[in-house]
Image (tube, rainbow, N blue to C red; front, side):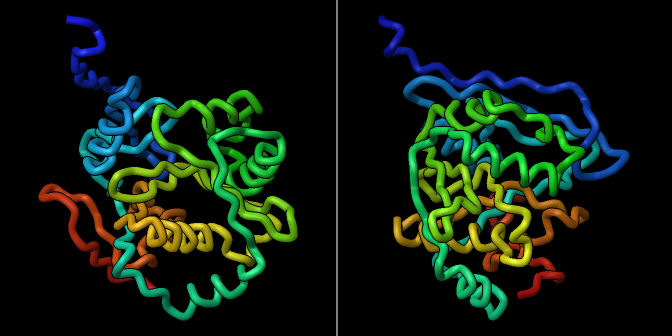
Length: 244
């Protein structure tokens, strides 16, 4: 029997405890596996629907002791109806042009990312990311990944690394020009991904993890209807603080 005919199931590993980047005085652990070979897209699809996220060729999921604050969430595309706030954001972005490109890094994107990190996440683990690190983040992918750029009058103002899955679009990482904070570009990109998923007949947009106690993640619950992954599978998320 040749090596190519052998189905290799992924092996999972557990990280050592480390400081949680979202909840003070908490520690995080992750379970992870490597994505490789022809089976990588199928494995990644299955793991995403089990609450995993992708970073380069690794799929990971929180596995913290005595904490389950991180909740996987996804937007139900067909049920989404933008409220007044979201309609204003879309209207302000009428002159923004989306460009869907292969997952290839360049200096223009990297310079935008550095400005974003220095403004929004100066003390975070990505703040000292170099150009080669950025290229690895963008290009090291074993699945169908695109870099979606957003331009105004030809100038790059935002970008999102996006995976296309069987069940939807997964927003892996997005960043934007911090000078344009009042343009709500983060929300604009989510709205545009919902529109893009609808145009591709994909049912969901995966937004990663939502933590109720984290103000940085509060924006995610505004994209209703939202489903959360719980012990019994995906179900509608009922968040009382949801507003639009």
